[in-house]
Length: 53
Image 1 (cartoon, rainbow, N blue to C red):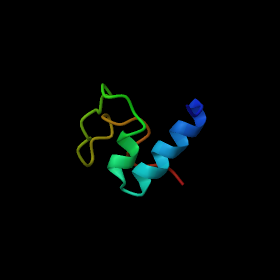
Image 2 (image 1 turned 90 degrees about the horizontal axis):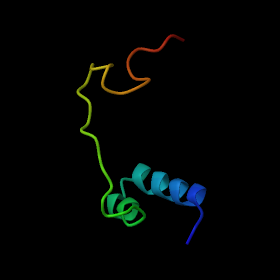
Image 3 (image 1 turned 180 degrees about the vertical axis):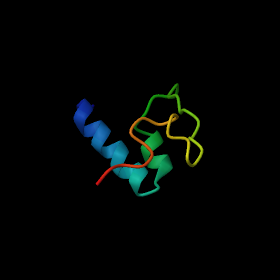
Image 4 (image 1 turned 135 degrees about the horizontal axis):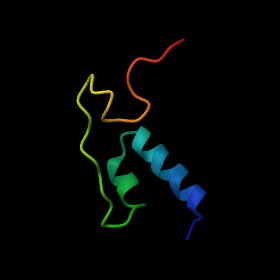
């Protein structure tokens, strides 16, 4: 089995390519997905919302 860093990189790569099946095959069956935050709800997702330049 691949090491943790490799698994995370592969999962991120698949997810970014919109290859959800490819990402899920790398995860356990009991993976938990939080609900997506609503647009403009900067309290729902850490580091979201307006950012100073």
